[in-house]
Image 1: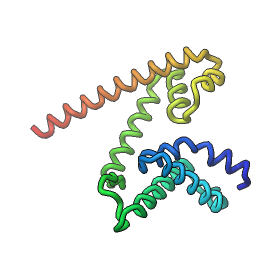
Image 2: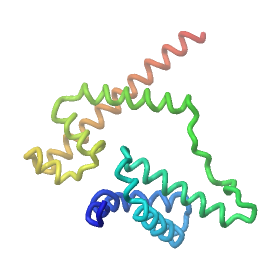
Image 3: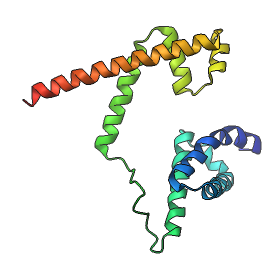
Length: 174
């Protein structure tokens, strides 16, 4: 991976990485230091990065781990501070999250084609409204309206699903 590839494939996550550092460290200066340290480490191991399939997940996990290490170094006993939330998900949580993602994906598939396309471009591919408008030959206002309608419909479908689950639960445990 050369410098141009590194810049294109890694530095595009700069904002997310900095926000991750900021949320864990709660200190602007430390967050900037953590970001710079991670960039140096990534540059040094750039050859290994080419094998990473989910680059965003890898980078965010790397940043979080680096931040936790920095917090440990600040503690006299080398432990994670008590106010640091433990975030290792249990298998039950992972299964629930996977079910939720699958359910929402199926609900998105039920939306009208234009709304489905726009919500995927905006929320999954993280494209800007102007970019979506240009690709789909729409105005930015049309993209915004379709996105708003898609999100409203998704909220309604999720609420309906939750109500149905609640009814089933109540019937089962009466």
